[in-house]
Length: 258
Image: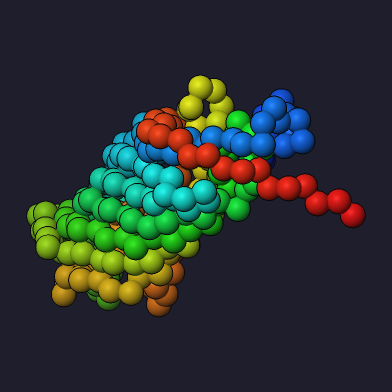
């Protein structure tokens, strides 16, 4: 998956470079003044519908948005809902029902709020964004333990696998988690106020509520929880539309000569 992220990142960078070549430079501007559009960009993460199509045990959607507060500062938010089923399998060769240690389903919603800082200096008429940012994220969710097995030292009845403990679904609800995210990403205009974006995130869980009998192995919005570590990674690929609400006049920065 990471190679697709890198490929899309390169394509977006090339798109930004191409669009910049098609726009006049600051020295070619007809006026000493320019107006920058300010407004709301809103859209959807494309990766989650794709994962929902290729993985019959996953469904998810994420809505994204940002608001240009200052020249390079944006308020940003993501809102999503996910459901994912997983199994812990003993061994990697010829997995079957007798090799499943436990099977569970996690579902819940999350919200992420924060800011983005645009590190890219646009030419006149451009509004592309290469940004770094941060998020505070909060998720509420539940786990359903679909089945569980245990290791029986007496291998007479189950010589090739675990002994089934229960196959009655048991739900653990009222769970939640909070974490902080560092975000790096790109939003590049492809045509008429439509933007294609990609971002990668490094999260750190600082609080979580888990069930006494079942740990948090996967958290909606955060992704996989690693044993012994509070860090996790995630990403998104977005298609969004920028809705300009008003404009601000800005004097172009003078060119420096050496």
